[in-house]
Length: 518
Image (cartoon, rainbow, N blue to C red; front, side, top):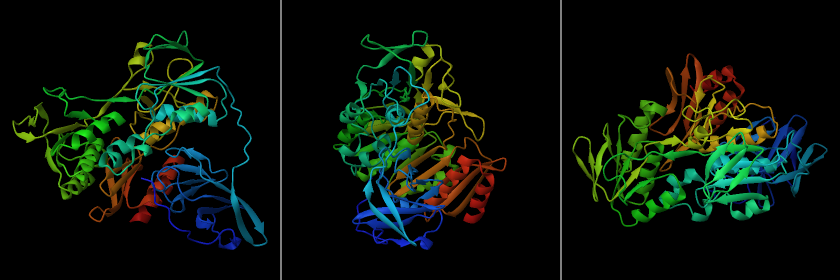
């Protein structure tokens, strides 16, 4: 989670540094008083902002400068060097912005200031906006509307208490017991009140009427809209076996799910995780940290091979085995009893806690009933518009065209959901830019974090540089000679550089990055 504050390091920027000592686009870490500050030269200008990412406290000095932005090495949050504004999730809060003076050949940083920004004026201003779904996509959309200058009514409809949460943490540090409960909510009621966003919780949407431009809630209340965003997300798949509804069998999607697993783990000794997915394996690591005996059951022969390939998948399995996790692969559950799980080969696994992580399905019922185009998700165009007028979709439910491959994809990543929510907000306010953000996710297993940029549904070549055993490597996934995705462990800047090259469609930069890692 958040990095621990340290004492001042680097030069005292209030005393200044020589202009000639600043290298173009290379961050210089220093301090103003006790505050860590980043100083960056771009052309004839210099910028100074807070050096600590507002997401999990990542060190921005170790990040990558792209244009007038800096990207965090940990989870790829993006900040404006000019204003400190968070331009790309997962960071939602700005970093401090500092005034700069040129005194001859020296650059001096003065106290923190709020950037003097004129209020933005969107090209379009719908009479009202209703957002269905208060997960990462819906929440990011709501606050982005305000950041982009929209002053009209916003209603955010959620059916999952307590509201927007840091979902990745639910299967990672929070489930392991190393993240505090107060870290989990993304925003509280006071934020929405301050932003004049009406947040309706516990009264979910039940019908969308595009012709009447209205949304009916479960209570019978109807919300009129000039623009609507469907951010309904995805629902976890359930097991269809006898015993799947027993009280010690848990899904893992919501804060309530994670809390229920934690409560059960307090008295459990032996856990079975069904599904060698990212969620399943992260849950296995968290439960091992709580000192439970853990067995993972999965249909696949190698965990995560569909995403990472067999070599890295085996490395992930080995990492878990080194921490005491047992695997029963190529198997699936036949039934679940009060204290055991029976596999399809008749073998029995003791279990007083069962966690199910076998994937999710997009929640398209609202869209399908309203006549929207649906195909393994809500079909959207390059600006996230659905087939219905004035209706957008974002997050796990949106099926869009990958700008790199041209194929339609639906990507279930937290950062993608937030960034699509931000893009949908800009689009419904008249911004004509296409959604081209490069997908990113991270998966944490004990003290090892795997970072993935891009999207490679299939590949014909994997080039791995570094050592999987040493947990210091970069793997490049290519198809027909083009790099589509990169996985890194211990090489954060490689991931950032790959992201920037993929974003720019720069195949030469990707080839050079691969060659440099050799």
